[in-house]
Image (cartoon, rainbow, N blue to C red; front, side):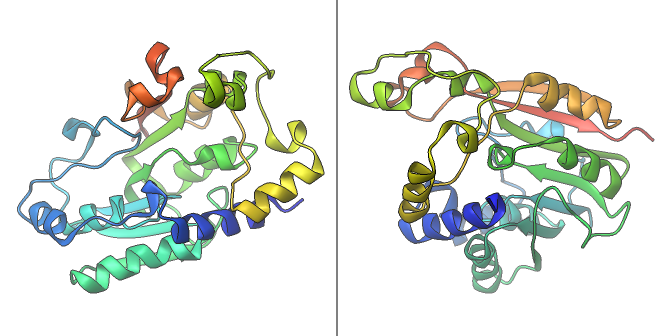
Length: 261
């Protein structure tokens, strides 16, 4: 099946439904970023440490990879960066374009697959911002390889990703009574675990198809591609009282990795 097309349509629907990752930043947040008061998120709750960014954003070329929605891109653009937002969802990209027009920001948008950055030249960026989004593709290795290709020497990729252990559990039981019942093997794949009818129902509901990845692929895959990891942290959902899994473990991780000079 065409996973990319399914997830493009799903995220376009999520924009209509007001998913939290499709709500653009406010003009007040943009103005604060212009004054140097800003932060962005790769994962739900913890802001990315400022030490993970270049000393100054001015004139830095930044790629927001699979990062549409009018959130990270506008903040970085307001901070002085030259921003390109690359995303699979046209509706998500429109969010960035809307904020750019509203607040007089310069943001380039490109619709495309995070695994294929052929629309971008080699050595084009000083920084890549890649929030939790590789759960929507079955193989993460192309993302790391393409990141190395488009990064300049000494550039960094800041990446968020889901703890693969999250996919062990039966989501229906967690939502029903809070029971954490192991129901799946890892790495998990919706296309292997769901029936055709369930996948069709997801398409009708605007729900994405998801895939877990091993830590070897998520972290070791970066080093295999030639990146050097220099930062790491874990995170949980914003409202742990409403998510059982967040009470017992980090559900997300983030890494900072650089392309050696």
